Amino acid sequence: MKAFKISTLLLISSVITLAQPGTWKQIGKAGDWKATGKAIENNGTIYTVESSGALYGTDAATGAWKQIGKPEYGNTVFMYYANASLYTIESSGTLYWINPADGSWKNIGKPGEWRGTIAGTIMNDKLYSTESSGALYVTDLTTGKWQVIGKPEFAATVYMFNSNGKLYTLEKTGTL
Image (cartoon, rainbow, N blue to C red; front, side, top):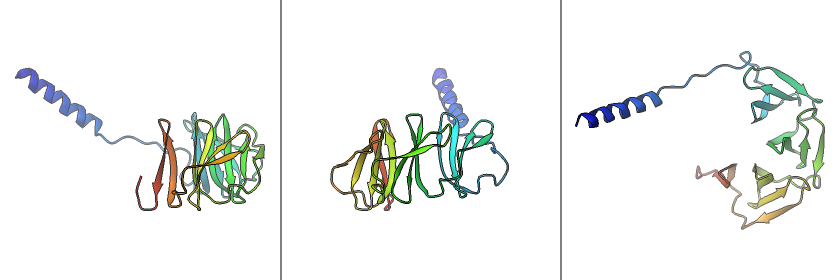
């Protein structure tokens, strides 16, 4: 009985310890991120596109940042990271590969082919995206070639993400 009481006490104290609020730390000065429109993180670097169209890389540990390339990303609608590269879909519907070291970029596939994109994620080095038509697409990021997957059931998708090799969508209805 004594062992049961000790085990129960240890369990309760563990739960109480785990339930403690976390700590947080401000990165940069208050308001520094106000102009941020899009952001993605990889390996401790936060990549952002600002309302000015500038692309920045910020060290998440220190807050040190630097502009990458020229400010030409003002029309970025979606931003992704894979294969040590950034990828964007611009308001024109064009998919771009971006070198995160210098900001150079080139389009992938035919210009405008991602015009109807409403959500997307990269999994296994491929872009999965949904369009307003409801179609789900998979795109090869090296060639820009895409193909439709399944039935057009995704017109209400708000967010798309992946975990453990599976795609997830969050729908307008609040359904995951």
